[in-house]
Image (cartoon, rainbow, N blue to C red):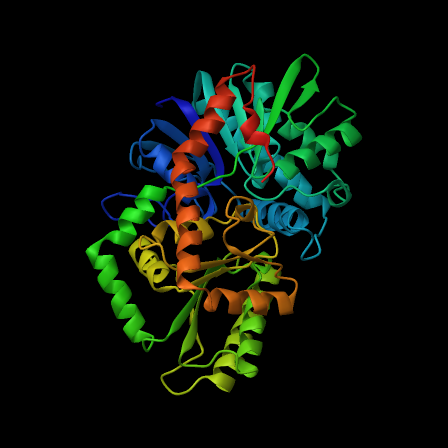
Length: 472
């Protein structure tokens, strides 16, 4: 088995669920998320990716993808139910997103989480060469750094949390809070999206584990675990080049014609998740229609809501509610051939997504809570003519980096409506000024800058750049 000096460890492998008859696999790209962040880096870096292939049963043998070795970790049906759907996504996910939905706690879920994290640690220890750098990703695998350090103390271990890290009063609810913190502290460097998450972590380590901790370091016996904020980004140049392609520009013109050539197109692209604020956004749009502030067909909303975690009951209920809401709004305000909302659930191809970004006069990204939200950054990168407006939740991590966006509190329905109207009615010169500033920021802080800053800090055991821990 080939070994690698860089090993990425994540819950999912970054590939399509199906493999072509010739054995070829392709990167699985979704709106935002981990794969979009790491894909550009790993295409040019010899590496191994350790993860779950998406099915249950024995782990399949998969070919390399763009030179990256795929090492599969098997999950049984019980693992899928109790680890992935249970502890990861019905306990940690809602808790880490401000308990927008009530977290559930079950002992068998915790036992499955331990079991699966041990399996990932064992697989990583097998493929990592001596002294390798291992980069563990996200909330599904918070125990892996500690388990891996016990197995392979020679490794350089990083851990990065892509989702928010909650304040102490929420995290303290967890029955196994100390074990999760100790697991993370197995890393040499713990990265968060924002500085306040690092602050929350330091407070919890000091309170729960009684270890000396600051927002920049934790002393664990004779080891120093460094902590910092590393806002994740996108391949800005790749998205800009894609959006500028003649075929994408032509597709954008056809899409606008297909929509009836409206005065204003509002676009939202989300996973179907209760943290994304989809229901609140639809309600705000509906009320603006009801009060005559906007009218169909002059203004239309394109809502892409890609299903996720469909076996989890909360997500099934959410999808039913959203589809009922879309149907009601279209029935009340749409006309034959002129719906108020164009509702799509299939994930768009990258070129189609870029075309959608190009026709969106307003991009509405209004999650109730989000670690970063790369869709907001992709939209900005795709606006190669420096037009368009971004409506952005102040509770998305991206808000700290994109202050020129029209920022709103998505919990405040009136504020959300006013923000949407302001974005729709923006002065073109002001909108261009805002967009140019955001695009300049993304060019200077793209995915390669993020990866360099994190991996350089992981490689440098003595210092952590101050700029990585500044607040936005």
